[in-house]
Length: 159
Image (cartoon, rainbow, N blue to C red; front, side):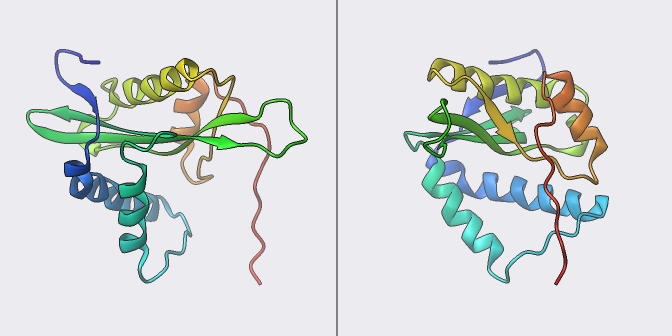
């Protein structure tokens, strides 16, 4: 997919460093928002390995948005098996979607999301799920505009 300003493409193994750089920016953005996420000391190394295993995996899709020869966004989605009690045996799951600050509100996020949602549909999936940080009302509004509806709330109790 492309627009006059940016293009989308599936990430290749050679893009791993770029995908990790965008993930690092995503984490920094959440910290700026006040997210209390706690990363393991080796989080970046672990995420790098995780991402490497999902680029071009049969049940995953990693997409990059590029403009002027550089990455300005990314999205990661995968199929997940559901517990056997549910009629839907598999669902899509969007693990990450990030657009760099200068490219927000220009259609990049929507294009990335629609790419993943289309990929899920092409695979015969009926639904996709994702988590939105409660400190990120902009992301919640973004996903609602794409048809997202809250299904459950996740709560945390500090021990």
